[in-house]
Length: 245
Image (cartoon, rainbow, N blue to C red; front, side, top):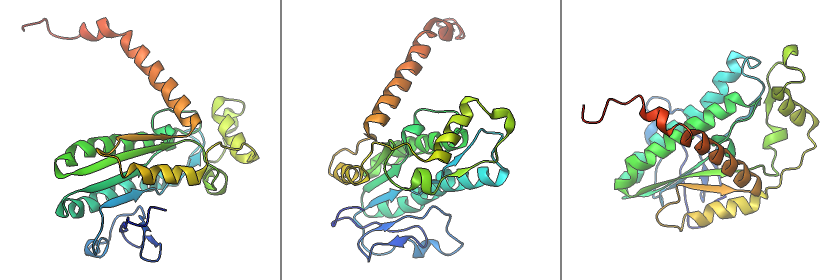
């Protein structure tokens, strides 16, 4: 999935591309296993992209579903990055690419737990980028829109439906998943190529937006959010101590 000159190493039993590239698996290493997870010469680029999508209003999801999506999308990615950093520092730098989604900037009903994990991993990655910049390590967050893969319809799960949510905005995304007819615009091959190309950019881009749908949604969300914040300039300052005190 990466380029021929890039080799990445997995955090514990990742899937292999015949020794050329390996995709990380989002799980915590077992005691004593850490040394087996990143071995051999590496160019220092890691792609963290395990995802899980469970759809439903917050109170429709089971405790197990909530635990699973947090473990996969948030905790797993955090542990992958934490495990990679010592190796990247030791070799004098590298690049971490964290795959998120436009749902890491915007939020929609029926995806509350998915958004919670994506907003969480973006905050983590953005802070880590500042922590490791002195070591020559770049961190890029990738925010793709809908792509024609099996992610939306092939691997997504639904929370147990509560009748009280019938006809509400939270039920709309459930209908999309159940019908399975909406065709996303994104070309996954072009998205992969854009991610690979970003590794030649210095300094590392903080974010890469992929897809016209992602661009439109993120732009509108940020503009609306900024307008709300700007309208509170005076009320925000009113809570300060008087100047000089």
